[in-house]
Amino acid sequence: METESAERSSVNLRAKTAPGRAAAAVQRWPWYLQVLALWLAARLFSYAVLAATARFQPAGPWWDASPAYWDFINIWDAEWYFRIFSDGYPDSVPRDAAGNAVENEWAFYALFPMLVRALDAVTGLGWNVLAPVAATLAGFAAALVIYRLFRLRAGKGTAMWGVLFVAVFPVSPILQIPYAESLNLLLLAGALYLFLSGRYLTAIPVVALMCLSRPVGVPFALAVGLVLVVRFLRRGQVPFPAGQAWRLTVLTAAAGFSALAWPVIAWAATSDIRAYTDTESAWRFGDLVPFKPWLTMSQHLLGPLFGPVALVVLVAGAALYLMSPPVRRLGLELQLWCASYLLYLLVFLNPQTSTFRLLLPLFPLALATAWLSRSRAYRGTVAVAFAVLQIVWVVWLWRWTQLPGGGDYPP
Image (cartoon, rainbow, N blue to C red):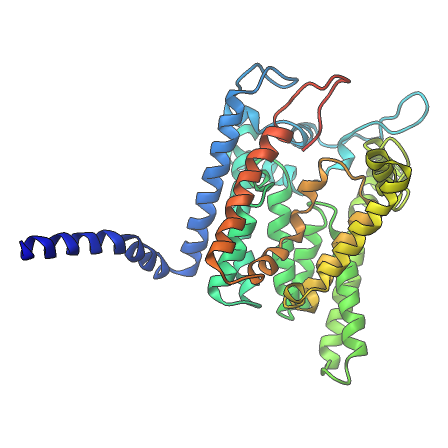
């Protein structure tokens, strides 16, 4: 009896420690395999969410009811990227009878569709295969760079939690959809990594490509310029060698020029200096007036009195968060990047349901979120909450639902 009891206890002990042994085995993997495995699990979850939602999708503008996964992810802005892939950009900005620009391809940056076109020229596999594959692979590459970026500021475990939070972020399904987000995330993470590492000149070509993927060049140039100013002012306390100073100055100038590249390209191609800005206005139903869209939207949602008050509270809350200890731990460069990008959104963004997706470049805050507590219960709860919100985002915004007034909320 004692032997039998001892054997049962031994089996139970082995059963209890098996997950621990499995976790220990994973911990012995090289860092890149751990990151890729984590990212793969997150992308499979997003695939399941998208595929399950597609089964309950009614007929819409792009397909019949219950479309296949590959059809379901090729909608919304993916259609615009497909048009660029197929036909390029118009020679002139299309306008209505009143002379106002109408929605057209110039609002979408060229790097992602041109990359897919180049892959198609080599493989002949077409958009439906290459576009989601390219977007997904760019996301995997971004995960590796994000981990290396986080390791500049944190230990291995916390850096891995930060990557997990990015991987399951509520809008993270966009990282396997034919949008430019995953490619932009890769280039942004690469630019920030080189920036933090002090490899300012090496960062220039990465920044130039980043500025051709999505409109993040202006806040990046602002962040780099602010770091230059702060380091110059603090040179008495923190050494700022002349070699670093001139290289950072060159990067600041290069980032500023790169931020203007796409509007200049649109101008050169159409002979219309307002080609890009007028096209952006077509999605706003009005001119690009700084700050105004946020005030208008706040008044629309909460009324003329409470709307502006709520907007002030929102801005103040964001400012306080950016000055909080976890965000300050990110370091001057990442803190100023997040502040610059949020300021850019406040100045230029027309707030709507797409705003959730546009928060993705704030991914360094995932590391700050991990720093809020070392508790696994807290960190696990955050990850689960993000995963649940993925379902909300896909069902609410990616899934097409005909609204009473026509159309649907864009993701």
